Length: 309
Image: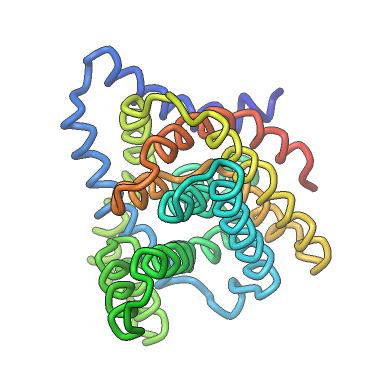
């Protein structure tokens, strides 16, 4: 219970403040949209850029960690598509959007603060390694499958062009790519620029958590409850269980093992709804899954933390 109070609840209280502020009319929806846009399009890309630019790639990118996490993510994506298509008879495009909800863990808004509060800021190396390729991997996989489903018979060149355009319009991807470019170049970030980035970065997670709460009130958990329950089970239980099994088989160090399992155990991120909205498919399922799974992860995250070494 102390873990729940000290580690998890403060994160969800910030989300709750945003939810209540919009619900009671204390903060306008248009304002929440602006805060979320600042966080998603500016502050968090700056956080990713700064973190990856300074990341020790040789020490951070453990192949066993990335294999454990992303094999689990790909299996969760496949299970979501297959379940939506064959259990609930959804169209293929809807099924891909639902599968994306199972694929995209909320690695930044939930995974980072919960891991940091549970194990301290020095325990985030594995989180940043996962986050560094999270958006490129998930969007690359999701967009590739969706474009293939939507454009059956399209030439390979056109398909690749559509995928590239969709990916590189995403600010998170741009922040990640820019961070890698600086890291590989070996050039230091000028001190004054680094200080300015740090000012923005300090606002990233609090602003994003508050805005997430304000956005969630717009997502009414109506209809498609069985499909939503399937997403929650895959995202909150099956994905982290797969990472646990693979991580143990690879003998991951405890710090990387914790980062992998906890990140996999996070609810579907807001990007799950962005993806569904981008294609106009399964938006209600995506919205409700974000809301319900975020609430349920209060208990499931506590459970995983209590099981971790």
